[in-house]
Length: 517
Ligand SMILES: [Zn+2]
Image (cartoon, rainbow, N blue to C red; front, top):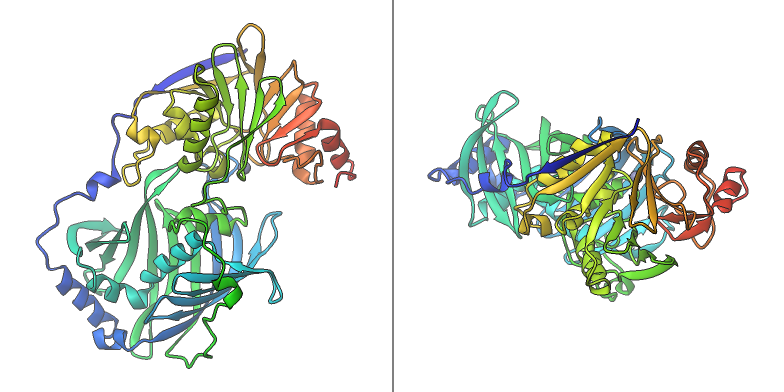
């Protein structure tokens, strides 16, 4: 039996991480606490005498968003080893990374060299392609360098905004907490009151889905190297969920480095940077998953490509939105990526269709890159249509405070309507055109839904087929998709992708037979 549930999420209430950052600072012995911590690490002088460090480590990475179930258990996506050469006196580093993906993705191997405001990325093997390191990737690495254990105390001591916050409990222990602002980010250092060593450093930042977030680096397994204490265990977390665990294998201090260790070729140096230098955990998660982050900080075009009468695929970026024109309103399929993209897409749609509101937004599934921009559509009053299983997930997304970097929903707080359905498809109609939305759980996402236009015989999908110029690459996901469509008994001639463009359904079928390349 078909069922439908509508909930209205009031976003006027809710815990705000941003507000807690406004708590009154306790009268300041912040500096004294840092000096005590420096002493525990071997003394300020020993820390200042560190000029460079060569660190070898290995570990695993995790994904807490691209899981099959919305809000489901975090899953490991890679193992890696690396060598990091860092200059502790200026913003220079070299990271040689060798990662093995656990899924179907290719392995992640690269070398990054950063020399101040310019960086080099070499992908793959030593003969691999060289390019200018994306400014946001550079900014993110340099921000990470500030919380390297060998550096964080000295960085904090140099910050005018340094203050003490109320103590906080961490793993059953009351920790002293210090905070400072750096390049628009709030850093929070937690100190162990017994050992005086730092236990973790949080950076407060925005996440497209989770809102105000704690991006945490935890230190453990402290060992003495020369005369300085160094943590050999590192763990990165986003709001308590693991992103990366490192076990350091060796640390060498004050190594005599080859003079060209951090050198970036002139040809790369001369390329103009064309993106904003936004430091963001989002980007590192994309690098870990070996998926695109290139549009971050850029402003890719919003291109309307008509794929049927009144049906537009909005291309120009790594992820499309599809707009379906109804008599009195519009339906959007997918609000991908993040606010910066949604903002541009929504603006362009409103310019093109000034008299038709975006009444519905239909996400294909909950993954970060596919749902990360949905709040831009929620801010327009669009009703979110999802299967039952995803309702609470989108309610959380609607409610999440975004005070650190206010997005359009934060600036235009309103009730968000989430309509969930099950026991069959959900139909939207204006009396002429019909849109059918089907739950089609796959191993990629259990809340996956396909959007079917019966008159046009078009099906809209994400991540399974991703057609390009009429072609479909052979992959297990294509088989799962074709089987899903056949099980639903849909008469499809065209597949329209959230990635890529369109292809005949026949191309997807051929790819399943092994012939589609
Ligand atoms: Zn996905």
